[in-house]
Length: 324
Ligand code: AVJ
Image 1 (cartoon, helix red, strand yellow):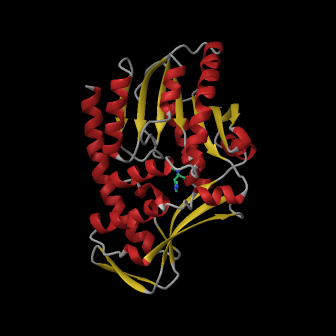
Image 2 (cartoon, protein in one colour):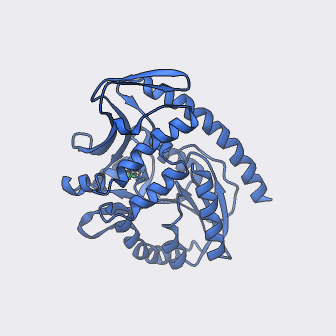
Image 3 (cartoon, rainbow, N blue to C red):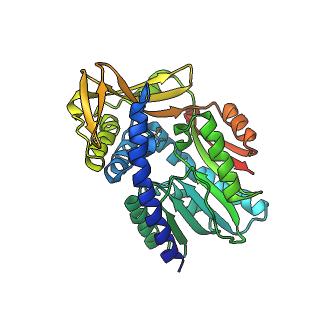
């Protein structure tokens, strides 16, 4: 019953997603500077490439957070016992491959159900199926949609905790991050918790390495959005003539990723023409970094209170427990 309903919603969300992909690409490439939304990286191949990034030593946010999570989960288990919240319902935003939920499930034995939201449908359904096999008592509901949108959750009577790992919130600029936090509060309800992983500000060379790996996996991830446009929107981007460009923008406290046109060229997409000057770039992603106090202030503006904070060694990454 629940599964059938979830599938219907998913199908509807997908066609809406296809329509907005086309509109967003055409609109974004008409802007100066040209831009594309990072959520469109994640087709099936893009999700795979992101998993490959996570396997890189240079991409510290993934393994540093994963190593911190068992400690966080053990503390949380005690925290919820002390707060007398005996049964938990988790909602994971941008669930991806669902690898980060495992330390929580292994250390907190009161999790009854999980709603996993992700825009990459096939990837999400596979990850959910695998999780069900490994945790047979767990009720798992996939929702293939943009996690920044508000969503109707059915009442469970359980304590709700949102889970938003990986510093995915870093993709959102300040106003979008506030909107996400506001929507998450409305979705999860008053008194609910949000466990959120946020990447920190740190020496620039560490940040630079993480987005400029020598094997070029990040470059392939960045360029894959052009392959996706070629396939889904009948484009003719020549990947040879675009270069990966990622750098730390200190003024804005963010990594920026761009695809830079290596020569003057015209590209056709959905029967329209786009002109690129030599050196002109498409801004494909921001990845904001926050001092923990900066993040707490932002969260507070959206009515979330910081209840706990865990820092990874060398302050490389932060995980906060917020309450609405
Ligand atoms: C998934 C958005 C957290 O910003 O670090 C990794 C995506 N881009 N390498 C990030 C990403 C390039 C990642 N987030």
